[in-house]
Length: 332
View (cartoon, rainbow, N blue to C red):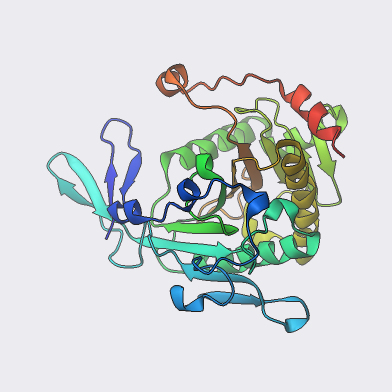
């Protein structure tokens, strides 16, 4: 079982999950690249037909016409957090610790080993989003859940160990300081102006257009004004919503269209880009807050955080957001 310790100097929590050191290193062993992959890998536990390698299913979404399956959800074989234990804090001398209580699941996005979300159709991505939403809503109902984080790592530099297309869900019994800080900034803005800061950003970007990449009836995709990394993209719901749990069925289709467009452009421009994306959303008990606004954040891994950034907390971005937007808009 993992353990969570608190940094006495910052209040930040750190998860110690030594079992994750046993994860497979498929990316280190396979250097052929995505274009050389086969549709089925007999050694991959996520491929159709290899069910004997999987833990028991948590959820399965049917394929088109009810044939086969489109997505699956399973417990992570090498979890950072597990349902065992509780969130009771205890002292270790002057330090605070607690059991590594929570959940860690894998969302298998396709039966096919060589398919990636950047090359999927809108309908395929729509099913992935539906899977995200169902797990988010169900996990938020569990007693002790404080945060549900859905994310995707693509490529070795982004932290992926298995090539087969998949995302992950981590549930925690505490809220990290970073998220509390972001909440606090939103609260301060709302107290000063009486408006959601993200709604104001959306309204300005829709007028300004220099960093806008995509817009439909539900979502706006932009390179943020103060992007921390090259080609960072935010996909924001135009309607104010604090929680990903509030997304409508119509908006799921619109989000799929936005993701197909943006991830498709990134894939075409960089071939097989290493990136992370995360659904940034409100934690438990904040789902109706007027100052919170969920969004999908895509962060390519084109640069490495170095000494100044680690020591200062300030990012150095070698490219301007407006220029990145021009490049991506030329790929439409």
